Length: 254
Image (cartoon, rainbow, N blue to C red; front, side, top):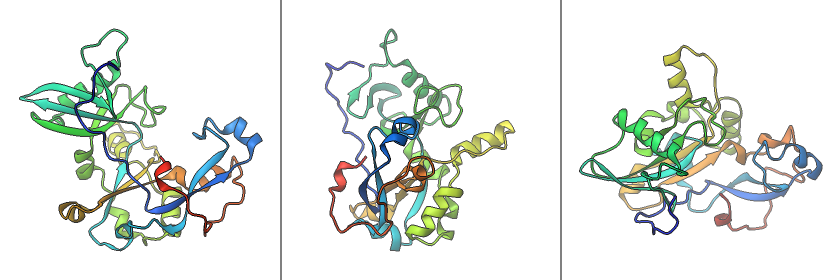
């Protein structure tokens, strides 16, 4: 990564949750033992409660909304011109694909894997998720890295079962806890003969009609935003799905 170079592309926009999120302390002693494994950097969790985040009512009531698997990796944006790779960014960090010594060659490996699969356009900017052995603990059990464009995910990783579930806190909590398996991994496993399942990190909600009208059109919901993700291992102190009347700035949550 060349930190002296200024990014030439914008960062991918931050996605927000359709439910309100609130901060809850967790059992500190249990956190010391299990927090790192569950991704808690401090003894508190930022959880969803059964309240709609203002402005995201469309996730619940617009029939044009659909859900796509949220891959668990790192965001990479690229630009190509006449078939040449001219810019690579990890968020706003500029990646030099020619920096092969002490560089992030696993990112370049992922891009070239996807080029070989025909997923990279000849011209234009594309954003996607890099997944593989060096990213997020490799939940998809890959031997090599792969970059997966978000526009491809829209076509291939959509949950057809989304419309079978009531769009409510309780319904989605149950779906995410027991049935939200990774479509990416399931498709890959079917080709290798494996029959195991891997849970998805979560979903991204899309509404292309709202995008055409220049309205907010994306939102995200992850399994680790629900209390049950931690509660069996680390007690959540004072959690109530009804939430508190206290208003927290939703921008501070990842």
